[in-house]
Image 1: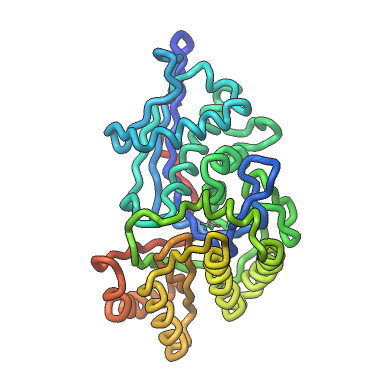
Image 2: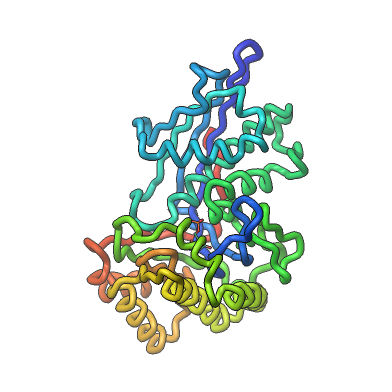
Length: 358
Ligand code: PMV
């Protein structure tokens, strides 16, 4: 942090992971900004991150922000950031005094269909929460702002940019949304799951198999909105609530079979909701299913701890216990690579927290 009295400059920088949901957020509550219709839980993906720095300077030419992507101007990103800043303006009145110089960079290719907005808005929310702490006179991030500590406030602000981004702040599994099974859970920000996770479900990794690296035919924003009039919505929200409770139990007890059953069911329920929306749509591609079937038959024959999940897209996340890394990567190389677009895949550990870079 840099701060000079005469010419106030506040800076902050964070490297913030993306995350993958195990129980999915799909659908928003009405009557609020970005409130989830059901609770979700995720693992952070520490090796797939956004590195963002923000410099807040006394307002220059009435501009609220200047954005660069790895140092280069990127006008196509500006509307999303402008919209985000206007949504948090009432909550962060200090913003009106400053121009924010925001520079951001992902360490994975943009447009590979993995949650770049979760990492990007996660990092931006953390930078803003950090600067806000200093404007409120705290140098150790301990000050509560609007009744929230630094982590809650980072998550709260990120949530406004992209709902799933609010879960990117923690090394423990992150729970967002009022969950019957998790004390202290909230619709406003994510919380780290307290208590111990069984060693069977620690140290898992993710290989993201890139089936399609193009733009999605239906955006997440449009997809969420289709749940408002979805005939199965209430049943789905109930299932997610129940699945979250069962998943937390499975993680505490180390019940890998139960974990796998819930995670895969959640992925398919997410896509089933898309396929039964009106208008209906399908984001899976033939190779998505081909990979899922290969994963199922490999698990059947090897009995190894691994499963798949899906995001709102065609790519497949292959989750597995890090202890079987070598066998797993061999399976990926020999069996799954032919189904990946141009042989692309990305690897990450789970459960890593953000890092301050300034
Ligand atoms: O964060 P959004 O609004 O892009 O929603 C994405 C939701 C899913 O990625 C499909 C599921 C989840 O919980 O991350």
